[in-house]
Amino acid sequence: MDAGKLGFVPDSVIQELGWDEDVDEDLRAAIEAHTGHELVDGDVGDVVDGVIYWWRDGDGDLTDALVDALQDLDDGGFVWLLTPKVGREGHVTGADIGEAAPIAGLSITTTAAIGDDWVVTKLSTHKR
Image (cartoon, rainbow, N blue to C red; front, side, top):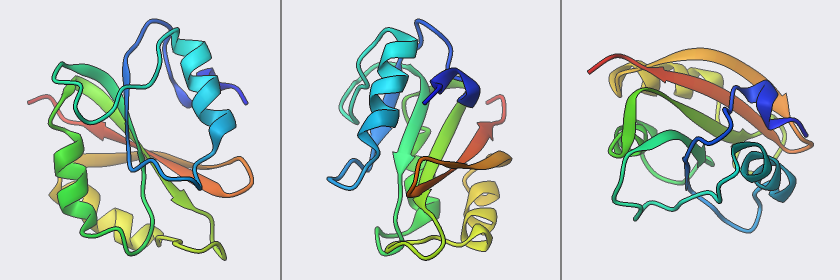
């Protein structure tokens, strides 16, 4: 898996939210290898260059989660929202993402299948 194709940049610090046992470990490893840093958790207490957020239907309010994801994100950073593919347990509809993102102050940039079980939606911040 090529983390560079997702827009990850070497030497960037990426925060990971929503980790659970169902995440794609190959993707996680590829991001760490490409950036040269381990993924940091929600308690980083410092500015991060990007956020990957594993989100499943039933995890709560997506808008609130996306707002929380912006807490440590540097201006101009991205949130990569990873949701289960159609037909997988926890699937989140594109309509749900399309409704939550702009309320949270994010714009949908791209959406693509990644791995066997996940879809990634890249969300851009607006300069704050």
